[in-house]
Length: 408
Image (cartoon, rainbow, N blue to C red; front, side):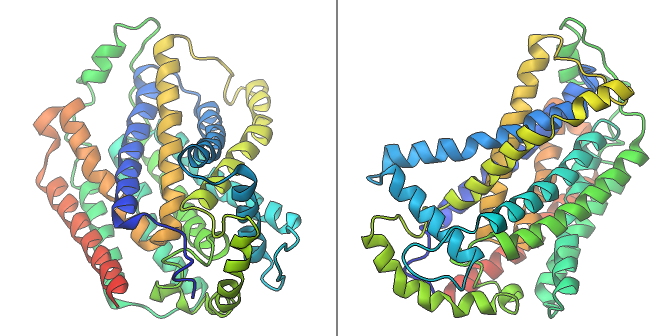
């Protein structure tokens, strides 16, 4: 095992802090996305999606500059360590101080990751303009159930009663929020605070969602796709030296080969460090690198459908009509960057089950957001409180499993 050579996770506080920022970022992204597409009337979901996902490319440069600024590591040493870690992960049979970088396998991995995060993300952006933000948030986060179901069925794993109970409990809490009337309790004819602010902006119009069924079905499909993406990322993209990859019982059966070669990596770690490479890579650098490359691939490739959608009339191209819309889209992009960067890191640290169930806490934050920015205390119903409490309890069960795993 790479226990003493594992990436510095900065303690549990760092992971919890990243988790908190991730939750807040998702709520901000959700609220602003619906605000732009409904209250401001800027209904261009693909273009917004393109801008948001292309902005992922900034996270690695920011992290890289931060490391250069706050540590004594040099840029070549950081990049060399990252290259070695990726090479050993994708080409485990290659050994030595300077394994050849598997460019083809790396590009294939990036293409799969980009596709895996693009399809659910695009469906989410389309759905949030058709259904209420509370319903979309709730249904989207059922990916916790799909992630666990896919993990067990795809890899023929054993069911874990406690983990299964927690996932089912979280799913039940989600259904309680959706069908208990958290969004229906809001009067769609009554403009909220954001609508009143938008009414003072030029060209601002309020267009309420008109196809909740279609939006909910699109979100359900996106949720399944995102659950699949999480599992495959954990298995094929996360480095085997990530702390929880080898401590999660669910994945022990899958990662036996990874564990077998960690002894060799441990013996080589001293040699690699003495050669000037920062190895293993600093905490979060590898997932942020993958996130940035996916953003770059989005920027280079996914502009192609924009003129096609314009010519066919499916989505006419139009720049934001005013500064309020532009700033709101920038806020969506910032929220998307923080959410996806944090989510990718937590996938490697906590795994898809705990991370996806943890993200169900966004429903609780969405309820608070509705109280503050929406219809006030009218947003609170018995079912919303019950569902939120159940979700918190489910995450608590999984968090206890993590704590128990660290103590054993």
